[in-house]
Image (cartoon, rainbow, N blue to C red):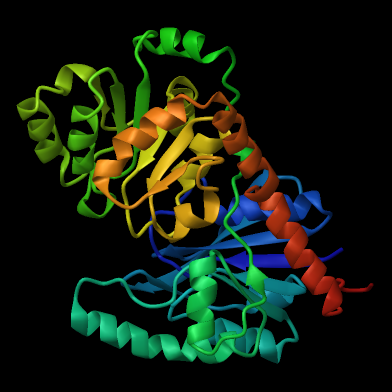
Length: 374
């Protein structure tokens, strides 16, 4: 049996126990469904002993003692990879400072190392920090040049090529269907259960109310859609400013603002609403975009690496450049029932973790990585 490890080198909230939609766990479930044993490793800063959980058959999640430097995790030891006879390590390390140490350990112990990269250069607002991180990233680039490296989007593939890194192909982030609740009934029935106006078309925005998500763009869009309602799920630094702008524009009575909601309940709103909007022009991927499309909520998104990769413009949603174009595309999306089915089909065909696991396993077989004792 092939044993694969997926270590998290980012030290933030995404790998915490109970966190929603952990990419590593979704990918691990897909590998396990193909007959692999999978170890998911998360850094537990401040912990003295490991902890474990088993979210699915064949999947073991380990929380290992680690230290942190800003968002970068450094495990006390990688010895568990050798002790568990890991055959391959699937790394989503991007520009993490811990990549070189992990690579050296794998090389010394005959463990196959490959990567799936979503971003390379720093996006820090501080120029000095950005320059420093980009210089440190050169260490990772040296490793990515001599090991199989996949890009999460076509934009990252182009960036890899620009930086002299041969790209093994595009291996996008996938949706973990195991965590998605089943929402039954037609859209009108779901709206009724949620207390939404069944007669009025409705758009939904899900995301942080912070500058990079551009939630204030909702105001001119709703002004141009006088017959529409909006559900806004999220909180952040612009929460009060958005509320004031909606109030000044006399739009509050057409909006339902929900600062926080259990993720399982968010899916009911995807099913209830006609259109999902995404204003972020630097969206690296967009998990809420995948979830909305999986529910048949047609997306209208600003051009960005993630939406450009996911949405077939004019088929499974619309891509726009200017805020002024949103209202027209929102109306067009709601007026095309076939687009809802196309959105669902796009995610099921191309953006579930199963497809990524199959791609990686085919590469491992070609490289002769078949598992201990085989």
